[in-house]
Each structure stands twice: as structure tokens, then as C-alpha cells.
Length: 208
Image (cartoon, rainbow, N blue to C red; front, top):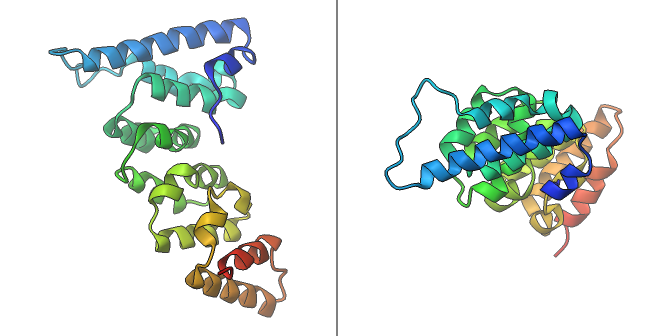
């Protein structure tokens, strides 16, 4: 998923939602500026920053259809660090967790956020799986975990089109080819159809 720009969002939101987003982004920018100002005092531990309240309310105020885009914009504007991303993920509902996962490529350069991806890959929530397997996972998941993620998609019905850089990472992967062959054999033995994505991924894995 390519994040929507602010301009694109403005063209989709009604007037009240646009005004709400203006205020939310201003609060997020103010928070980011305060964190980078030398000597700025930290927020009281018991106080939730206003932009984080907006983050949780995005679906209600801007519609569920646009919530992903609104939340990822807020995270970027606030320059959310790993600690903040982890807290929002752990405390958030599935929709909020999805936004955190979608934001990782823009906000985290290292593999430090992989525990969040691993957590999402352990669920059977297909929206979380889809969000987890974007550019961040393609760049940082180790081969074993990545192969298991591909199999998880097949088990849960997530199209492999959602696996970022599938063709790049699967090509010539003999272990993935073995796993896919075993999976196809198990399905056939059980009298169940083999999903077309299995054949597609297997063809990639068997390429030289």
C-alpha cells in the first residue's frame, strides 16, 4: 500500500473531517518540534499527547475508509519513535496496529521494529498480515521468518500479491520451493485444491 499524500486526502475528506485533520496534524507537528527542542521538558507520564488521542479517533472522525492514511500521516508528522510506535501497537485495536505496521518503512531504518511484524504474523487477522508484509518486512525479515510468512499467507488466503518483493526474495530459494512442494502435496493428498499462488511462488523459487 502506497500512503496517500495530504493533498490526496484533502480531496477525499468532507469539510469537517479536513478541519479535524488540520488540527490533528498541527498537534502532531507541535509534539515533534517539542521533542527536538533542546531542553524541552518531557510530557508528564500520565498525560496522553493530544495527537495520540487523534490517532485513536481517526476512524470515527475521518471514516474507516481513510483511517489508515490519516493515522500514517499523523505518525509521520509526529516523527513517532520506536518506543511510541511499540506502545501504540501494543495498546491499539487492530486498525491502529495496522497503521503502525504501514508506517514502519518511513519511520524505522533498522530491524528494531521486527517484534511488531513478528506479532502481526502470528495472528490470523488478514488485514494485519497484509500490512506486516510490506517494504519493511521485505527489507528486514530473515529468510526463515519470511518463508513462514509466505506459507501463512497461503494458509489464511492472503493473496501473495500483498507480499512486497515476492519475486525478488523467492527467486532461486530452494528451501521455499521444498516447503511449497510439501504444502501442495499435503493439499492434494487431502483432496483439497492447490491455490494458484502456490504454483506461482513455486515457479519463482525454482528459477535459477
